[in-house]
Amino acid sequence: MSSNPRESTVDVVVIGAGISGLAAAKCLLDDGFKVTVLERSGDIGGLWTYRENDYGVMRFTHINVSKHNYCFSDFPFPDDVPDYPHNKDMAKYIKDYAAHFKLQEHIKFFTKVKRLEKTESSEKGTLWNVHCQRVEDDGKTVKSPEEEEIITARYVAIATGHHASPVDPKFRGEETFKGEIIHSVKYKDVIYNGMEGKKVLIIGIGNSAVDVAVNCASQGRCESVYISTRSGAWVVPNYLFGLPTDLYACRAFFYIPWKVGSAIFENIVKLISGPPKRWNLNPKMRLLQTQPTVSPCLIHHIQRHDIRVVSNVQSIDGSKVTFVDGQSADFDVIVKCTGYKIDLPFLSEDLKKTILDEDSNSIRLYKNVFNPEIGHSLAFIGFAQPASGGLLSMSEIQARWFTELARGRCSLPTPLTMKEDIREDEAMRSRYYHSNRHTIQKDPILYNDDITSMFGAKPELLKNPTLAWRLLFGSCGTYQWRLQGPNAWSGAKEAVLKVPVTGMWHYTGVALVVLVGLWLLYILSFLF
Image (cartoon, rainbow, N blue to C red; front, side, top):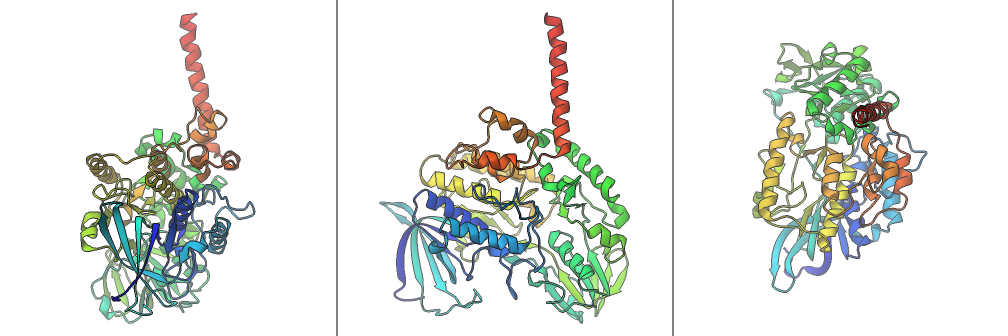
């Protein structure tokens, strides 16, 4: 540590310049805070910025959530961008957002946070010291270990995400494998990774695993492509009856018991793709007990035998891999698409014990944002996993809530109430299949409504009568949470009207109105 570190003071430090960090910076700057954003790389966008030899999207990645549900709520995508933008479209969109709101001038690039510590000041209350260092272009190697900067702030927003530290499960005999083993974080495409013509095993069946498998099967002319899964999966097409699948999530849906809703969508998937067992997908859970695996073409490749789905790995012996169902095959490459764990190395041990449960990959945060013992001076932005739809709307609403709290326009419940809410949330998670990625799972519409109700931005049907139908039976996109409340956007109504309402929910709504009308007529017939 430097004996004379450089020191500075700001209102808020935001750690990370991905989508969550940018959303936080924009909200805080809108409200007049002095903000510094610390970013260890040389660019904004986080995972959406393509980087070779580093974390980030694969070369061919498209968003698996439609653009209406994965955008900043006051900055829609251009109309000519497709429903599911390519990562290049996403990167340009993020840069356009940052330029439009002049965010770049508040970002310190190539700056790594070394340590975050809480201090006390009798005059100003809680303060935070953020110890940071300059790093090389790789975003990791410290330029001058002896040099350090300490930034003191009243508030800190941690927006580093939960995809920074890959989970690397070990299998019996893995050390004997003769080929290459990589995690999907290092996969860019089949040509870049030199996997053409090879026998490839992909472990996992989440969205990344399916993207890798389809890329190997379609671009790489691989000799064989296997997907190994321990729990199976429901594979949902990205379009249902001509519209993006995520547009089927709406408020009306949440009035249905989740098991009934799950049965509805399971039967739709079976109608379109056939029973999962036919393709050896064998899900061990209901469709709404997990984050769906979304793919327009996995089933197609399975049908053509370009991809084979097998059970979990039992053991590895040289190039031979044996699966728990007794099958075995030889492979040249293994790609582990086994997810990520929450990792915040710059937190002190005391803070880690207060906030993280590393054994279960869970966080002790009220609404996934604030710790009851610390309060609103430290916010975690983007530490949620959407059950459907996109993270961006959730991150932005968390940032808006944080801003309202920092300005004193709303307040948190008592620590006891927050702890009770955390316990109730843990009990509700029992609905989901046990997995690391489900420890922070949330239904975006319910979650966003819950948070925005605390600062007056929850869409209200009576205040928006011309949109009431859409707000109940349509997805409405991220814009709906800008219709009213602090920092409402004048273009929100027009943007909501551009989001298609699915035929299924439209006609369900019509049927419900007709039934209610007939019921009222029946009642009135006895009164007059």
